[in-house]
Image (cartoon, rainbow, N blue to C red):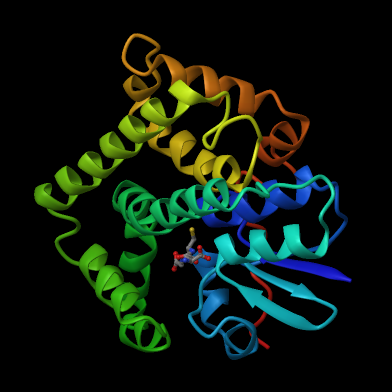
Length: 252
Ligand SMILES: N[C@@H](CCC(=O)N[C@@H](CS)C(=O)NCC(=O)O)C(=O)O
């Protein structure tokens, strides 16, 4: 049995949901409400010690890290294949995964956390719960960022750095797609799946990035990706990816 712990609409959750949808795999969906800090509860930390989403559980075994989750899915359920067999192309595919995990995630976090987490932090501070909640966060980097959001927020330099990373990723997709139609050539692969949620989310904050005058190949790739049935399914509001998080469950 496959189970996915995810938060629906976050970039990393979407990566894993996209891969499962491309494979047409059934899974039990467990929504993890980040706003209610469900990802820092002891029961979830047993599955994912970093306290982040997503986590795939396959027959009771937890797999973490969205890029590795997707490789695992492709290895165990090889049809249709989402990794090139050519070792050079496979290495290139992994470079896209690394770029998504490092620069993609750190870039998207600046505008996303600024918009989605500030009110929650204010509420925690008002209730006097802030320090206790922060102390339960396993990753120091996340503890520091939550503190920043609760205080002065990301600086102009943080935004400039995030925007530079977005520009760099769009420049890289534009260059790679000259040899397309997909990011590593002829085959639609995990490179496309792992990068798409970032390209989409960057454009949600900066629509000009998808201007065909500036990034014609990336715009065309984006549109072809968004027309795939698995992508339509993943991006449509659904019970597992609601507009608003469902009611938080009581802590286990
Ligand atoms: N490298 C990890 C990063 C996971 C991650 O940071 N996920 C975000 C959502 S995209 C998260 O759980 N954030 C925790 C929070 O918002 O407190 C992966 O790709 O699985």
